[in-house]
Image (cartoon, rainbow, N blue to C red; front, side, top):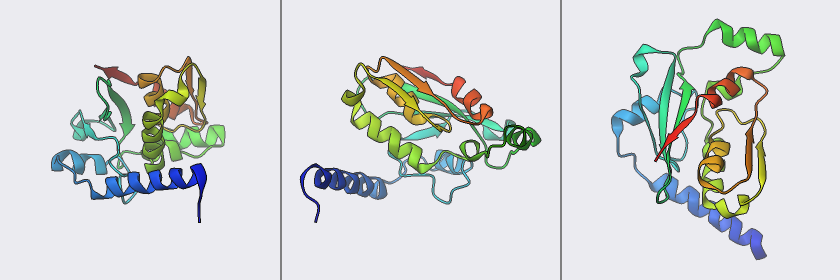
Length: 173
């Protein structure tokens, strides 16, 4: 049986998971589009609601708008790769740098959970220098940069293509 702070942390994790599972998507069209950006059978937990901004039929990349569930938070716009638009250059870069492309293939559910955790514990980043290693699209690091008072946020990944996607990030109030 868990006691102390770890008991509270595990209760919080179960509460977050329960809320995510019970939440129903409200925009069916956006949900269909979101499923196209991932190779995972489940998109995630819908902890950070998002929708497609562009028409996914015209490009191998799409812009996804994340609406952070706190007052006065900016909307985050991330460019992500569509599931059925792999390009030869993806594999050439992987071979050149001897890396995989896991950060490029999808928005991983763990990335969403980490971003939600960071958003829920924004005060822990106040005046801190933060580095996110193996960030993929960098959602967690971008959330920290957008809504906390961190003194510096560095987002990194071993795949230069994925880093380029993080550089295409923008936000609006």
